[in-house]
Length: 415
Ligand SMILES: Cc1cc2nc3c(=O)[nH]c(=O)nc-3n(C[C@H](O)[C@H](O)[C@H](O)COP(=O)(O)OP(=O)(O)OC[C@H]3O[C@@H](n4cnc5c(N)ncnc54)[C@H](O)[C@@H]3O)c2cc1C
Image (spheres, rainbow, N blue to C red):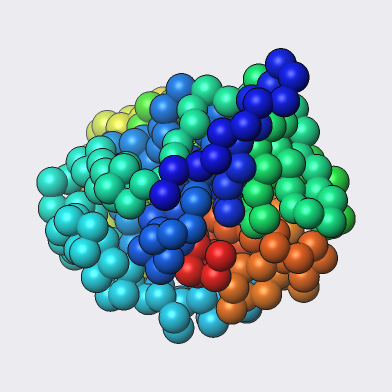
């Protein structure tokens, strides 16, 4: 059923049963779920960008890693992580994929348990959501600049320069500050605080980690595989295997992104550049290289093991400053330190990369203020919150989109 149009003064008034602020992953899914549950509900999505789902199109390098075989509350941080168990019990990966299949999307899994659309195009995911909205009669407003969100006894009022949207139920699905170029901002915090919520400020997550290491300049542009570990006061907090990318001020890559979720200033990130070779084994390889490359300069000790520039940085890090001496002149302590440096190449965490480089943000509405069975606010009746506006953030691998979609479905079915 179409929305009701009334005119009051200069402004158009549009009346809906439910208005969803944000036409991203959680908002579009919420709209679809609401209409699938109750076709007669008049549902609108209000989107700031000139089109919906801009961020969705950029996910998974344009391929959209939409969920993961191993969805579990353990892969998330934030106050809502514990409560997310209830969300995932109701909507696990299989359920979500089934839901998407009913919308027309087929998916496939890679060897790490990450699901992508079979087409390997994020646009397929957005298209099935857009087409479902169209089919089901969701009204989408794009390019809207919301000036205020208010509430009185009769309902909610969302005001843009030209229109007043009135609704009984309101969903905040406008995401976080991550990736401002794709629409990220903190408006969820403003709206929700006005409606009586507390809000844990957004901070960047799943982003490069800046370090103060002087070695980075020489490592810029290098990619290497290894095992990264986040270390706090000598204790390993989390480890991740994968490709590490070096920039002139930070270390990056999916494995580093995942550590960034838990990293604090003062932590260290250590890289084991040869996780499949023990330090003892490595020592005998380096002693052999000392003989093999005896007449060559010291930086050749790691020839055939790691890339040249990385070898030079590791040897420098190990404390051997003079590369001009021949390998034959390296003493036992220097060989041992080099072997150790390959196993524990260490960087201090200075700060996390900014929102521009972040895939997600920590922060949002604290768990205590949301009912996980409906995603309804406990502070404000008929208000619902989903996606990144909730204080939860998952690891890379489809976990964040899974939460966005699952919380969107739950909110939508509860409207
Ligand atoms: C580059 C990149 C790659 C990523 N890849 C993956 C991946 O492969 N897998 C994965 O699980 N996660 C990935 N993520 C994270 C994932 O995209 C987000 O967690 C997810 O989109 C959050 O959904 P959401 O609905 O909360 O927010 P969004 O999808 O960001 O949607 C929010 C929408 O609200 C709109 N909006 C904002 N403010 C307003 C306002 N005031 N008024 C109206 N509309 C507003 C925005 O324009 C946007 O369209 C990636 C993120 C980035 C940046």
